[in-house]
Length: 185
Image (cartoon, rainbow, N blue to C red; front, side, top):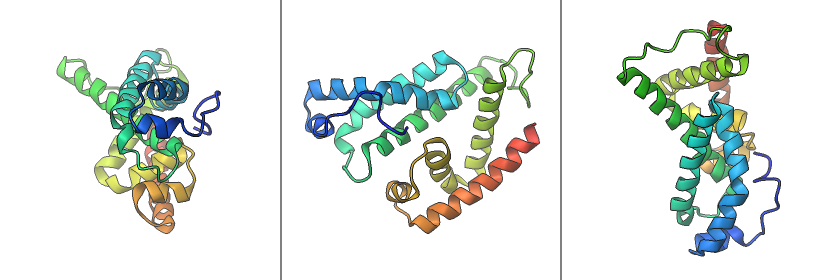
């Protein structure tokens, strides 16, 4: 998310939304919505699923705008919420499929029925789940850097760690993900 959206965000809009101004909140959500949908689409292969995750993220932004401390960029805060929403949506869909008796997702995507992009995203989500199970502390920095394109300093601020720790965790995550994604190809 290099910018909140194609529209320019007025500098005081976030502050007004944080203070409880409902019009400012509505304007803010309108501005960030396209970026949130794009973020969720990077994780989820189906448009409807990405839209659902984006809607959940926008609700979370609206409900939690007062907790945004103003440290770090608003864009980074939105990236965290959107990424987490997409990952939660993926887990919910997977759990629903398992509960309804649908067989597990295939180990690799079938190219006859799945686009390359969708297959890659499914592989990514599966690898992220495995990474989170084995090394949960490295997932957030990895997602924020490699999928969210946030700078190391901002990730350090968001995670409450040093830049060196962030770099180390991202390196660990990349090593894991490279091996996991290689195994699926």
